[in-house]
Amino acid sequence: MGDFADLARRALRDSGYSMTAAARAVNYDLAYLSRVLNGKQQPSAKLAEALDELVGAGGALSGVVLNADDTARVARSAAKPSRLDAGTVNALAGVLAAYRRLDDVVKPEAVLPATLAQMNEITRLLKGARGPYRDQLVEVASEFVQFGGWMLAQVRDDAQAIRLLGEALGLADEIGNGTLAAQALNFKGYVARQQGRSHGVARWFTAAADTPGAHPAQRLGDILQAAAGWAEVGETDRALRMVEAAERLTDKAARVSPPDTAYWLTPEFNRLNLGLATLALGRYDQAADHLSAGLAGLPEDLRGAPWSWEHREALRKAVAAR
Image (cartoon, rainbow, N blue to C red):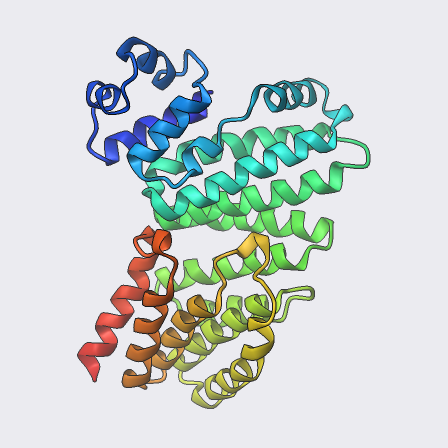
């Protein structure tokens, strides 16, 4: 309840709505809305959906609100983690999916506090969890910790981001989940890129691409981003070989759907990664073409995602260097 209140308040603020203006816009009593936004009352499903539509969250904001049955189920598991059940894990996985979608439409600063609060609750639950559903909870916890690291990386709290990504990697290894492990390493590469550390870019994305159990779409994206790192440190031949390897993997990656844990890894998204690689190799015309096509091919709800600024800036550099 408190997490929804925090998310909704921040989303309304970022969208330019005061509480009074929001109450008027969704046609709800101001006193009721005030209780909800101050964490004193659970929102109705209709109010959550109305606020979601008002801030343009595409269902992600209302998705963090559990129904009454799931709320009771999660509460029972939280009180007695040794009695964890499948319904609790599924409910928490649904909340995580909503948070990930929020990241595509809301500023990271608006999502980060509630993300870390939820992450801490899930990891606390995991410590006492027992039984046949524990591994499923480890998977959700690994992805949530990884997501927390990603959010911290976006606001440039790099040290904390790296710490969480290391924890997420350990959880992924505990259950042998290669897709989650590869994604945690990928995010470490992202941090290195934001820091301008080309050796780190080459190292972490290469490690992600070589992770056992990584999805073909992950391998494709990681190979291309590793190639950019190798090109930037002067290993041009190695970078070119990696681009060639990525081209051979393209058809295989396109034939399978991206993993749920990296749903954004479509062929169009990997055109963005190819754009970064060709930009690093000094192939500016190709880079501009790939980056333009990749940005244009993103789903409409992702085109304004805060993370897309990096690719727009890369496109600007490619066009300027032509």
